[in-house]
Length: 257
Image (cartoon, rainbow, N blue to C red; front, side, top):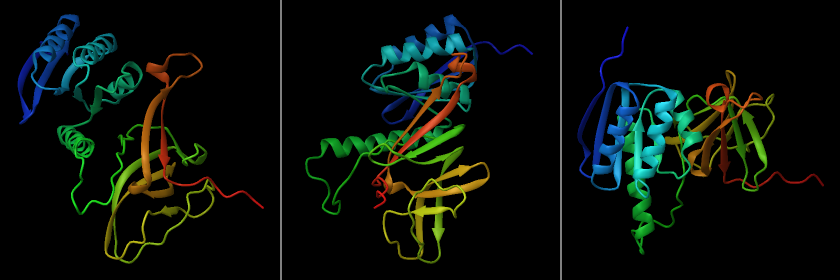
């Protein structure tokens, strides 16, 4: 079945963000039209919806390059449920201008986090009830085939095959534990605080196959980086492994006496 003809529509995503919706088959001429629309979009924030677009890898690379160039110094969120787009963006884009999200709600959340971080950078005096704040770089871990959890010294504490963000409600005070590399041991719960019950805690859950290795309090997560690891053939875009490195606020293991 042939893909429908190229379509482009524009609207406002929110009060400060322009939305470009792309549909149908996107060829080189279509890429140029999207990039031209991005040039004309007002403000520094832009959402480009590719959920209903049919686009090949060469055109996708050209589009990502073009968006990164013409929106330098701004923020572009590309909406697509397709994992290959996130893989390509991780390899092609280097400036941090372009980020891939899977849905419009994810784009709203990303822009909200931007607003919160920007307020933290520009406010000389935080609100009186805020004792401290630390910017945290979080990313989706969908499609990741390897996850390394590292301490603040860079040492690998845990290796899993997948991970996800999960909110859990504890009806009684949850116990705490240390993040270890022992896959045969009981799963670890690593919390930032001694929570009273009931408590809703946002956790990074690390899995090895179907086995849960650890649930790590989001307060302890300092950075999540996702990248494509090249396979021996060197073809990172088609057959590479998507891997994540998670840095947490935990000390290195104590040395044996």
